[in-house]
Length: 356
Ligand SMILES: [Zn+2]
Image 1 (cartoon, rainbow, N blue to C red):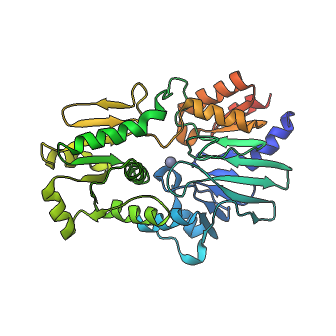
Image 2 (spheres, rainbow, N blue to C red):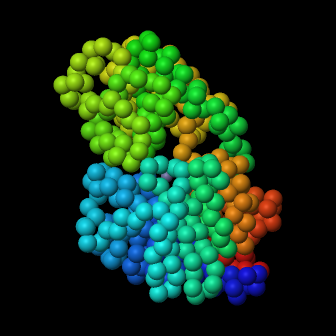
Image 3 (cartoon, rainbow, N blue to C red):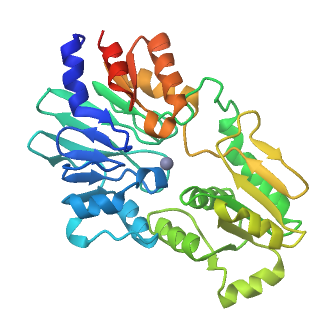
């Protein structure tokens, strides 16, 4: 690469569209929908990665994701007909007419994957990280020519220097609060199950309670190796008895926090799990509410570290999900690593400026 013509060719086979679809080669769209691509890959269960899935189910011939991803999506109410669905394990290559691809593990949520594509047409490797944390440890680095990368925490000020101690602080806090009354934990699907796993591995033995959807998703993650331990549906008879003991941890979707805080006893403590906390790993918001900086994304440093270890010739930064952080991150890559980086989607005139 290097010449302007080449970049143009590359962007025809690796790009991010305003729909949020990541286009790789001539057959694959990832995490979004575009007309006329027969294969839709879903990297993981988060809402901004399953956009327009119903359109893809109607128009594409194959919906591909890891087995836990497809199973959980069905549990969450998405209809993916058997004849169109291909559950695909990690590191298994699928050959197409213009290249071959595989899913690569990533540390983000249960079932999450990166996408690796060997392009026969241009003779290059293209990789899409999707969301990840712990590059080089939990998330293997793909060595590719063109790297498409997320940018959620793409601004230099979005670093979490205390990220290595967060899990231990979280475990200690829950143990401490359990001695005073019930503990409610709030997060998104995936992160709630990770929290359960962390607490069990950290020696928290109190029973867990959950509403229906959280309970069902947790049962699936348990099947795939998460430590979930004693977990009851909140409305079950067993849960009724546990509620009386006041010694339990209840897991709830973040969207329900208001109702829960209003309706729970004054003895209950509430913990919000969020990545949007950079100064401290654990912050007390008031008498009853705490915030723990447990993120399922890498911070700015992690993003940079992935790019430098991958050492691609071109980086495409996801602006469809990252917004303005993508512009900042692309700039930092070019400035600090001297690798050409383009945020996408961007307007055609702006692309022209990168061709120069
Ligand atoms: Zn995600």
